[in-house]
Image (cartoon, rainbow, N blue to C red):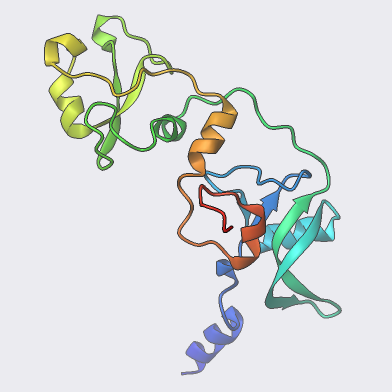
Length: 194
């Protein structure tokens, strides 16, 4: 009984893990949309304490030290502008994002892997222009054959995306949880009220 009480006391009331801070660049735009640029409450408080960010909105929850009480930041703005990257890293996640998390042969969005359009066994390279998202079924069907041999066709020709293009695609996939204080800073593909 005493051990349970001590554990509850140490953890303290409601979980602060559900209080991430939306991080905006100095121009008040999110650093990234997908994944959404979020910091833990600890990182947000530390950055505010070090005067690296300006707090724009706060949660009701607070943290305390012996001398200070601080409301948990829900939206912070960087004091210094971070220049967005122009080159997009060739990663599995960015490849799936470019292809909108759907198979480029059949359009399925589950059990995704990636496929070399010109198979590696036939000299195909691992590059933006030769790799696409594919479901396991289509990838298995294609194997090391050419598109013509296996009877598949691409929905869209693969190419290297620009950073801004990936940001725009990311806006189509809002996260499951959006705090109300973030809404004025996020521009998802939603119709505006007239």
